[in-house]
Length: 268
Image (cartoon, rainbow, N blue to C red; front, side, top):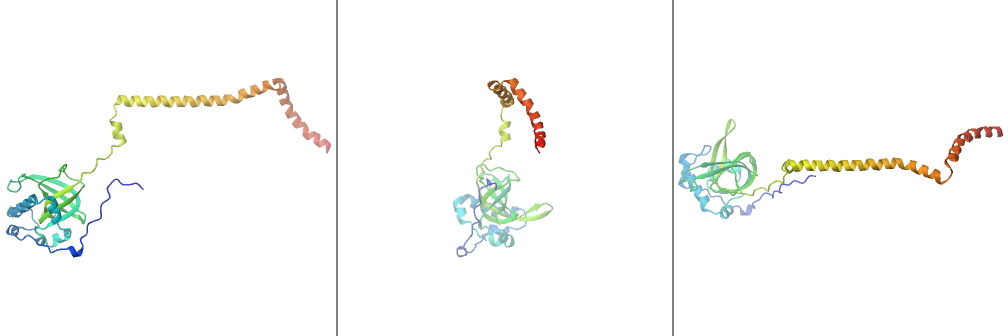
């Protein structure tokens, strides 16, 4: 019954069949040298630089508008040449972000950022996205869990090492969007650790004084409650029958109670 603080994820976008248009790959001469299931090679630099230039010159809004929502991991894996240079829109979770320097002929910033992420439509195998202008607040690291939105041009199936095996990840060049998560509320233990030791000692002493005061008050009331019946009995004996006569009357009660059965047997 606990309510989660995580935002509710929207339903995945769908594309009506009537709006699906033909896919036109980039068959220019730069892309003829691309070889899939290999690391990025020198002979692929021309196509790589072209996609970086296209990503810089296309605004984020225009790239998102052009990116297709009907291309998924299966398409890129089975027929990569069919989708070369096609802009694709994906949503997912970024797990690792790397950065490295490159020549100014590749990008004026002379630095690229590599985002490894899993898309919502395929969480078994990762994609890799290369960007030039990281969003504000983005940090490099691994074991991340950043919800992101990706708009990028498909480059190739890049070979990477996963454990003892080699695999291929669809490589995109484009832009990334993300919304930083709100900072979590500090826990009670964290707040207590920030209190100075002197103030903490004073607070503990004050609580002890309050505890002792409450305990002494309860003990005093209990003592008064136990002493109250004796005083009422003494006052009652002085207001009515004298104490001597009352004591004699109390002593006679058992004797009359014992004589009463004998008298009744005599009558029978």
